[in-house]
Image 1: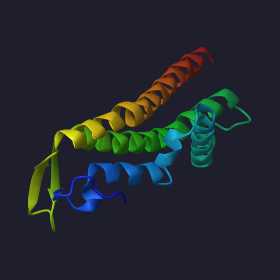
Image 2: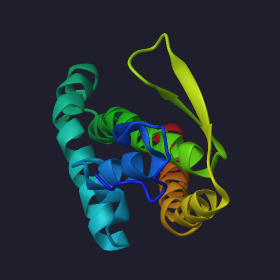
Image 3: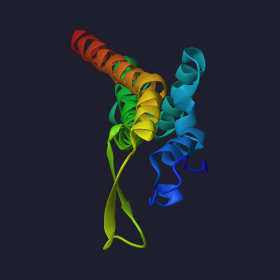
Image 4: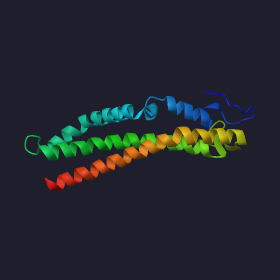
Length: 166
C-alpha cells in the first residue's frame, strides 16, 4: 500500500483511491488489462477457451457435432462467449469503480463499519494527481474493454448471420 502524501488524510489506507487503484492493478485478473494488445488478446482467448469446455457439452446435447457441425460450433462459441462477457463485465465494473473514486473530488469512506460513513474533500494536489492517473492509466484500460465488448458484439452479429444462412 502507498501511504498518502497528505498527512491529514482521515481516509483509512485501504480505502484511499490511490491504494485501491494499486491493489486492483496488481490483482491477478485485473492486471491482464494492462498487458500489450497481443498478450491481452491471448488471455481473453484462454478465458474463452476455458468457458468453451463448459459450453461445448451443452451445444453437443442440442446439436450433435456429426450431424449439425456449424450449429454446434456457433452455439458452443456463443455459450463460451457468455462466460467471457461475465469476466469482462467484472473487469469493466472494477476499473470503473476505481476510476470514479479517483476522479471524484469528495471521497466517501467508512471508519469502522457501514454505519459510520464519512466524506473527505481531496486537496487540489491530490485531486490533480488522481485525475492524471485516470486520464493516462485507467481510461486506456476502459477503452480497451469497450473495444473488446464491441468486437464481441460484431462476432455475435456475424454468428447470427451465418446461423441464418445455414
